[in-house]
Image (cartoon, rainbow, N blue to C red; front, side, top):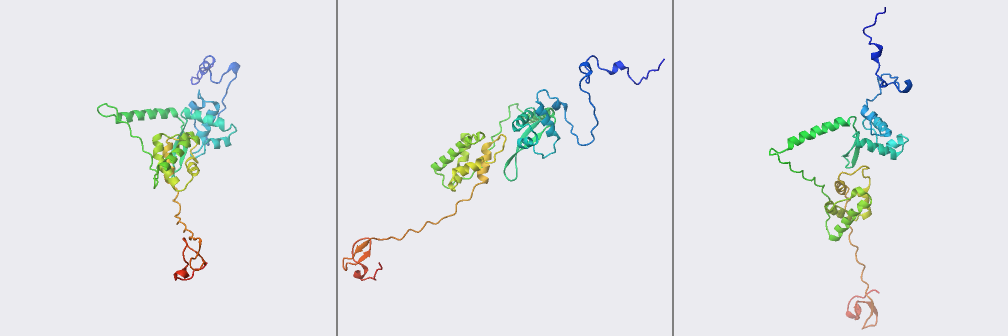
Length: 294
């Protein structure tokens, strides 16, 4: 009679009941893992991403790739399309999926040169971040609530940056500036401005036009190199560009001296000699003056 090893559970207890064994499929087929433990060059990625029920396979793969990259790597659409064969359209759609489910977010920052750049932030646990944000918002609302229980007053709207002012704000000049601002949305729909924003920016555009800058050049300065993603406050960006890129005034040009006056020829009433004068009469000799060169 054999002796059973008490440290080894019975064979029947080591198997999952029925067909629920994770490595068992139909007729013994299915996935089997042959794993070797990683010690270098690996990334920990949650199953909530790699087994996400709503993300496409391309979005899952792209999310895993982005989480494996070092800080500072380029993950814009152009760079990813150059790296993978799927193309810019499919990659852009996958990035939107990841952004919708919280695995990516885009933040706009102003660099020391004054340009607005967009940074992509990869979030490896969006559910945990949302929970932390909810907790923080709840604490902030509790701290900001007045003792009386009345709702806190709304925050004032952040003012737009100051813009240059024209030396001579003629109505026609301001109207041309306003028309130029209203036309910007035809070049980029994101530059749709409210009447209040246009009224604030119009003097800045007028200051450019006053300095002999053509409307085409002003439009190019305001619309060139815009961020590829959405603009949070387009009027603030335009105000910054109007102030920071204001060209110098044109150099002073002295008015040209008028040409000398050339009087018509007249016939002298005393000696019949021709001479130049504004009216008929006598020449200088006949008047007793010095001779006049003809």
